[in-house]
Each structure stands twice: as C-alpha cells, then as structure tokens.
Amino acid sequence: MVLGLLGTKVGMTNVFDSKGNIIVVTIIKAGPCFVTQLKTIETDGYNALQLGYDLGKRSRNEPWLGHLAKIGLPPLSYIREYKVDDSSSFVLGQKISTDIFSVGQRVKVTAKSIGKGFSGNQKRHNFSRGPMTHGSKNHRAPGSIGAGTTPGRVLVGKKMAGQLGNRFVSVSNLEIFEINSEQHFLIVKGSIPGKPGNLVSIQ
Image (cartoon, rainbow, N blue to C red):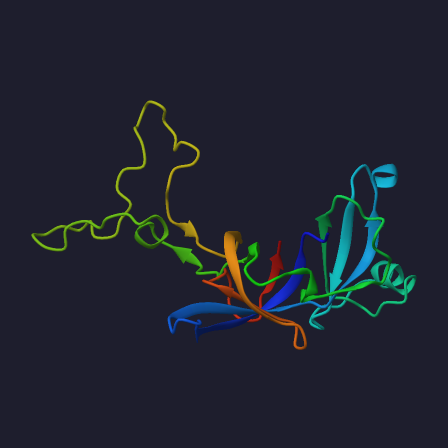
C-alpha cells in the first residue's frame, strides 16, 4: 500500500453532513502522481516509492529530465519518497491517485506554513507587552535577555524576535470527509498548513 500522495491545497469551505451540521473542510487536489523509481532493500537498503507530481511551475535540469525520459514520463515538478512494506507490487510509470484513500480514513498532511516575515515576541511567542501608560517606554520590547558577567552571553534557544512561519508543518489525524476521484479532489475535515496553491504531502 502506498503511504503517501502529493497534491495542491485548493482552499477551504463549509459543507453539511448528513445530520445538517456545518463542517469546516479543506479541499486538496491530490495527484495524480507517477512512480518514478522503485527502491528495495536489496538495492537501496529500504523499500520505498519515489513519486513525481506535475504542477507545471518548476523546470528540472537535464539529468532529472533524463531520469524521467527513461520510463517515458513527462517533466514532473515535484518529487517525494514514501516508504512502503513491499514495492514489488508497483511498476515504473504507474499512475497513483485518490483511489488509495477511503472516506473516514485518518491522514497526516505536511505542507509549508504561511511566511509572516520578521516578527516580534508578542506575535511569535505570545509574550505579554509592557505597560502602555505612566511613562513606560517598554511596550513591545523584549526586556532582559540574560545575566551580565555570568554567563556573559545569550543562551542558545532564547525566545526572541525572528522569522515566523515559512517552515514545514504537519497536521495529523485529519479525517477524509469526501473523495472526488474524477477531479482528484480530496476533502478533509479541518485546516492544513499553507496558502492555496501550496504543495502538500498526504500520508
């Protein structure tokens, strides 16, 4: 069984279940992906599938295009590996889509979160601000960041201002609400990281 699939986040919306309850869902265009390489314990030390997904937004170099041309595939934009128990049941160039999933199944979705740039402690770490009145000049300042003579430096891991977002985040235990195999849509309950159009990995 394939343990993952690549896709694109389409967006979020509300749907009604059979009892009339409103459910917030995320729509993902999952696949179709193509098997670009089979890895086995004998040749690589582990069993895995290398899947390619075509978004048409990125060009590949000549060695990569030659790798795909050997198995008769067009240029694919993104590549991911997914470990499987046995890769012998798959063939190179095989098309894999939403058929591997089922309604009610729980999945983990990994994607790059929305980048928010250089952010302060209040936004990045949920710090409290200083007094706003009575002559205070410490409103959103970080305050003390460590002792002076000992240790005489800022300790590693100190929560300070810096880059927020723009990193890979995984959300687990998302339930598949509906599957549209014709349009390769996967509808999951809840939200997933990133903005519409982002590449996502579903496992």
